[in-house]
Each structure stands twice: as C-alpha cells, then as structure tokens.
Image 1 (cartoon, rainbow, N blue to C red):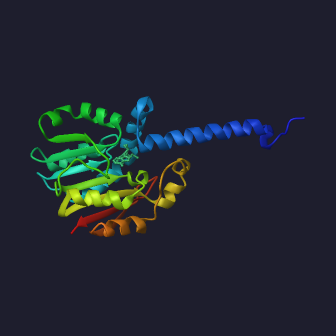
Image 2 (image 1 turned 120 degrees about the vertical axis):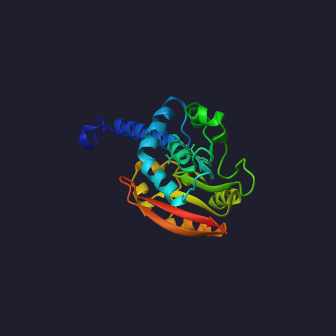
Length: 228
Ligand SMILES: C[S@@+](CC[C@H](N)C(=O)[O-])C[C@H]1O[C@@H](n2cnc3c(N)ncnc32)[C@H](O)[C@@H]1O
C-alpha cells in the first residue's frame, strides 16, 4: 500500500508540490533581483505599482531642487525616473543605472524623447561600479535594491563617491521583519537589520536620518544619508 500523508496525498505528490513551490518562489526572487524576459515585463509593471509610494517617499526625502543632477540606481520599472524628471524640471538631469539589460531597454524606449533632449541619461551600471565622475550628483535614490548587493560597504562607498558632499543619498528598504514574512525573500534576498544598513552608510562617511513610511503591505525605511 502506498504511503499516504495529509489530505490523502502521497509523499511523491508532496515532494513534487514542494519542488513547484521552490521553483515559483525562486523565479519571483530572481525576477525582482534582475527583471528579464517575458516575465520581466510583468514584473516591471508590478514594481511600479507596488513600490510607487516608497519611491515617491524617497524622492521627497531627498529634497530634490529644480535644475539638480540626480540618479535612480536600480530603477526597475522606471517609476522613479518619471518622478525625478518632474522634480528637476526642464533644466535638470536625471541619470538611471540598471544591471538588467531588459529594464534598460524598456526605459530607453519609454523615455526616448527625454534622452534625445539630454534631460535623461540611462546606462548599464551596478551600484558598486557607476560610470560617473566623483561628486557628479546632487542627489541619488536607490529603493528596494540593497537586498541584492552582497557587499554593502563597497556599494555605499561607490554611492558616496558620486554624490557631492552635502548632497543627499536616500536608501529605501522594506521593513526586514515584514520582508521575511514574504516567502520568496528566502530565495536570494539579503535582509539586513535597519541598524546594520545605517551603520554601513555611516561607515561610508555619511550622517544619516531615519524616516519611516507606513506603506502597506510593506512598511519602508528611508535612510537619508548626507556625504560629509
Ligand atoms: C526589486 S527591484 C526595485 C526596482 C525599483 N527601485 C523599485 O523600487 O520598484 C530591484 C532592481 O534593482 C536592480 N539591481 C539589482 N542589483 C543591482 C545593483 N547591484 N546595482 C544596480 N541595480 C541593481 C534590479 O535589476 C532591479 O531592477
């Protein structure tokens, strides 16, 4: 007689269902860390919808002035790029950097006119190695990205290199306890305590203010760092 477990399912069926669950969760985590392919288009839409309030909050916290030179690092679906364009106005410059070639292609198509007129510059780039001169930016945001960066000290040293002294660098992260309850985060996310992220920013030479956004379903922390 076959071995029957809960709900009359065999051990083989349970193992197959666990395998499917693992594949689905790793696919979600992989897409969030580097949206790509046909699924990536859907994830770009989901990111823009789900994270718009956190991104807008980060841009508010950065205190961006008209005519500024700013960047969104790891812009994903590009919601932050649109808001930054509004904030800097026609004489400002918005940079966007991504490791995902598909998100870059998508944003280059969406913002073709702004790129043509020089208001926006999009390029491949990781937050550990950005194609920008020292002190090139007045402000930068990076939201929901540091989970995918193994070496936070290297990333923050690079971000501080490109943001001018006294400028603003806003790092937005989902609350780690809330994130840990989302099952896909077990598949490749590094969820760090907020205090650890703040300490890494301070270690890179910033003063840091901590703001919180009640941002259902995931509260966010905005770490507003200013390079000395
Ligand atoms: C979860 S999505 C967040 C996108 C967007 N910032 C938002 O909040 O909706 C993470 C994005 O960061 C990008 N990314 C991952 N590692 C990165 C890195 N080292 N440097 C720059 N971008 C990175 C991914 O390609 C992806 O588009």
